[in-house]
Image (tube, rainbow, N blue to C red; front, top):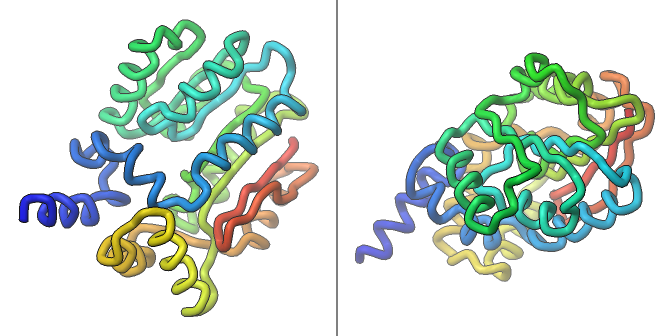
Length: 237
């Protein structure tokens, strides 16, 4: 009974309040069930960064969450500098503690802000990572969100984004639900995910995202990954 109540609370808050203590505490476990191929995303980002980023790159991590992505990258690229931002203070504190516990925080600056605060940092970045973030940004604000990232990038800077894209019919939605169950979500949780999509996510098509990025000024925009309606996008300034 207690387990059922806990899962109900998690389902209610998972995408709505990233400062909620239960969300912060169980985020890393839940996200692996919710996002198909979660670990593969980070492997692909790793491969792209090894190919395109400079030897001493400065990486902007937008929406750093609990720090899983940061920990992975800091281990792989100890010579790089990272600036991690997140508007959820509790998430940011969790990330700080995680990296400090493993002595990986020497080259990481944590800042409590969203992308609107990037203009105040007076620095620019070689790469910006926006992993599982922009699908929470309202459609009317997506262009501003990516514009603020674009302006924070160096010349020829790179933006890597990975997000859920628009779902066009019920079969696509049902397939996504089945995949989430195969990944580890219980049937009740996958149904809650489906019911929350419209309220918690602001989905646009992959084509519309490419159009936004090109209108902002990115010279090259292409997909680097796709799992059903999840797309990875690689954009070069």
